[in-house]
Length: 277
Image (cartoon, rainbow, N blue to C red):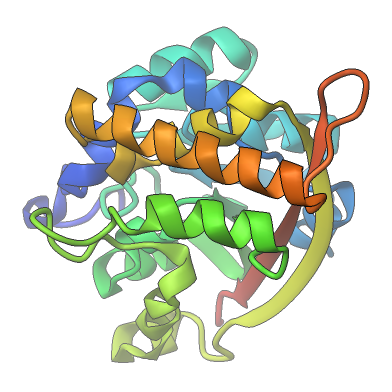
């Protein structure tokens, strides 16, 4: 059996579609990657040279490039936003990226040994998508969900996050976000329990990425719910973040080296579920 019922096709959250279409080159440039140990854990028990692997909601290919580096040979990506696919084609030209959402995958049953999703599952954390993912996974196949989240245990990061996260609710409604934790509830739906009877196991990996001053607010601008703000609202937000950065620099809580780089602390999560028999 290939693909699901037509009523599920092409359903992509409006904020995700508009926000990620706005500036995919910026997204590709400023978003953090994943540490090697997180990628290795996501692929634990998978032979990358032999396994058939699907990456869903591949975006611009940030995770895809790491999967290629990890040796994934039989890899295909799926991304429903056209502008992201165009950037993907530039950044990862040797991997095929098709136009497909998570809830309507054009593959036969049990086609893949592993399915991975980077920084995206919260957008489609529902029964339809999980059942569809389970359909294309072989029995015993591995679903790995990866996320990065800036570590708000550090005061300057907490203040920057508070400035831009204030925009993920309001007139656009409650925007799905990983940090809100609602995504995990999808695994409790009856059909999802049947597909993934052992639920989901969560592991965390701390790392840091270098960042310039402008990249701190550019990273905020790459957030989907920020990209959909008006130009005036985005400009105001940049001003707020610039002031936060200057304040923490002056207080000694944020330091840039001679190359103009500071360390952005990031916590990565890898959540794994195994397809039942």
